[in-house]
Length: 224
Image 1 (cartoon, one colour):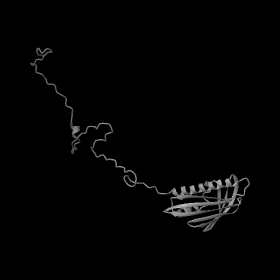
Image 2 (cartoon, one colour; image 1 turned 30 degrees about the vertical axis):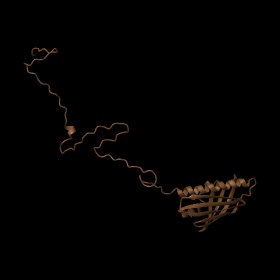
Image 3 (cartoon, one colour; image 1 turned 90 degrees about the vertical axis):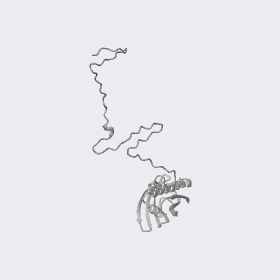
Image 4 (tube, helix red, strand yellow; image 1 turned 135 degrees about the vertical axis):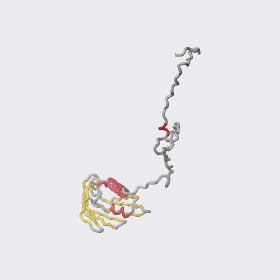
């Protein structure tokens, strides 16, 4: 008999983990050993499952009966099949809200050309893939913890400044601030002062007929 054990800590309550593991006929494809599982019989504390798969590359079938001891233990063993012997046990231990899952397997392949080392590798892959599958599925629906800025561990993040109406825009690093313009409140029926300003053209003074013009040299010429 080849015996292999494995453990995994799952961040989920023991009741949820037990409910997941007790469905032995629902997830055989990830184990690397069983490819299909057909439920033959189900009772309140026991179920019988027909497995089909490959043991070290050799196709095998195994009819197994599992006994449930909620929420801490599940025992299963082969009653008929291509393996000489196959049995195992799940143990669930609550640890501060989490669950430690232990899986133990014992098998005797009874198949020519399958050494104990090859059987050990098959059982080890079965345990690791099964435990990892249970862990991923049980922790998939965990709520994500989100913290507001400045709360909880980690660096505090200062809130971004808010811009008030009429305030100048933020100045980029290394640049100059734009000139601030005084904003006067608009009165009823009147436009803001900025819109009332109009460009006035300079009016040329009209010279009287008797006025004399000065020439380029400062001499006074006759009037036009």
